[in-house]
Image (cartoon, rainbow, N blue to C red; front, side, top):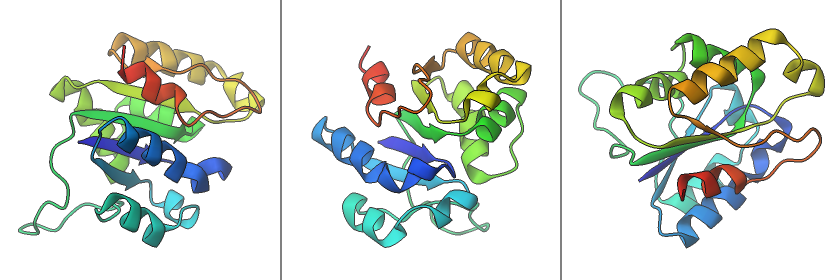
Length: 158
């Protein structure tokens, strides 16, 4: 089971491309969206594509788990906000909670940042990437103005 964590970035509507690539590699995919990302994606299309509900909020006590535990996680697109909160251990959304727990699970995690060059220049961003790398997170190269849906997925294969 591969969790695809999708954040609220302009490219988020294309996450189906990542899901298709993952499915072609044999992954069963579940999507976890940040609350703001739900406004950027076509939830019905992604449910049809994956066969699983989109997760964006915590379950209530006693509710069944809609996805089984992940074997790996890809975060794409990963926004400035998510990268920095995750590195700082802030768990104020389901997506961040899962990312913070992933370290303790010991599963492979890869991230494809998507942010502006001005955000990438902020000192907190570089420090956050260093912390994530020290936690074993594979970080795909950030190229301003260019986004790859498969770059982070390729890192899981290594």
